[in-house]
Image (tube, rainbow, N blue to C red):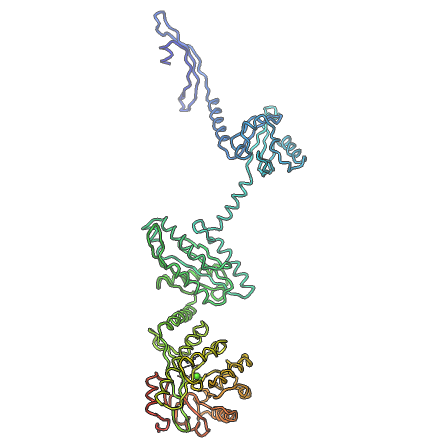
Length: 619
Ligand code: C2E
Ligand code: CA
Ligand code: CA
């Protein structure tokens, strides 16, 4: 106004008014100023128009056009003849046509020819009668590609109800389909590690349990938790923690078979499902290899980080038959492991734990024992009952464990058989025993032989003859100095194969004894078929002689029948003079037992041989 007055021009301004009730109006004010003869302004004449509503409509229009401009949906407005009057930028992104190319055209340019004419007829009928149409329609982009779009057409009518324009809003459904796929994947995948997430894990576990239930199989669930993650997050920051989890996942993934599942369970926890589990031990092995894998240093941001982990496992169906409880059990086991040693595992069932732990640590120790030369051979003399002289000895292996001391062969031989460690152990015993015997023979300790026990696995081994032959050659001792002890169960499986092996051994010149006789099949008629030299009556028959009349009868029957087959008879576990008297009366040939000596280390055995110690000097 000031400017208008000064420059003597009309004015036109828009401004706000605040009414007494506080409401705001916007007005358009125009005016002219009249001036006196001396040029001073005397009055103003003009109009004030309330333009509040118009202003609001304008704002809304700006807003609407901004919405159109920025919308992801394509918007096309046509007049009643179908000519496009307006197209927003999204039309370009979706169809490939610029708004300029579209304006003035008929939307027919988008047609894909995928729909029959009736489709369009129905569409227009719906627009005419119901004022609009919505649905999926296949259209074609400028480059020719057909795509599905969600289309909504609305008729804009004038006040008489006559359609003036049609507004079409549409979006590209092929994009939606793609993102649905991504969403589905994201729902089952852990974003950080790309491993299956907890949801997918639960799904898979349920499936595993269901199929194991039908097939009568076992399923194992193990949780593996990183112990120090919280610490690392706090000191080095979350990105470092994330990197650690990624790298841990990379280490764990290759350890798990395709048919099994490794998933990210939560923050610092992984979970592993093993299907078709034969033995709980396999799960223990898996956990151990995972713990071992995680115990190696991680390089994060050029820094070497060491972490520890804890693992816990539970099994279907022995621990629980329901998946949620199974996971809970594994969690309990993992917490127990965390509270014990770091880098350790626990099984939910504690009893199983101890068994498995003992077995496992024994197995690991056994492996190391071979390299560390923790084995020793003890000797138990074998005596002639007739003369009382030492005629030989049985080699019995001993494991001197650095922590547990002497471990009984009854405990570790079966384990050695299962793990294949029996081969090196057996070879060690035979070489050691023969080398030792050779020294004793050289000292002139008589016509003695050494008996070596064979395990079932060794007996079945195709290379047995070669191994024995090589050992004899290597040591440089006559085969008749070696007595091989086998058991009935070893020859009863494949009788013909056993006979062949035994014949070959006999032809080599090695002597063969049937150990623990009476505890197995004890078939004397079978014995006839085997080319053996000696029969050892099991300790269990000797133990209760002479008190037990049955044992007395059986033992004397075995002795006389063995003699009829030309076999030498050895009584095992002879502890008393009464037993010795009985054996002598029944013409048993030889004996072994605490009565004369327990198994002893080589130097003591050597002393016995040197002193010419006799059974009858005991009296
Ligand atoms: P086995 O061949 O029957 O060995 C005899 C076992 O009876 C030995 O136990 C011996 O210490 C024990 N014994 C000897 N005399 C008496 C006695 O008067 N009273 C009592 N109560 N026991 C007596 P050990 O040394 O513990 O060996 C146990 C088993 O381990 C052996 O039974 C044998 O089957 C196996 N074994 C030992 N050494 C070897 C080996 O080098 N290779 C293989 N494959 N098995 C072996
Ligand atoms: Ca034996
Ligand atoms: Ca025996």
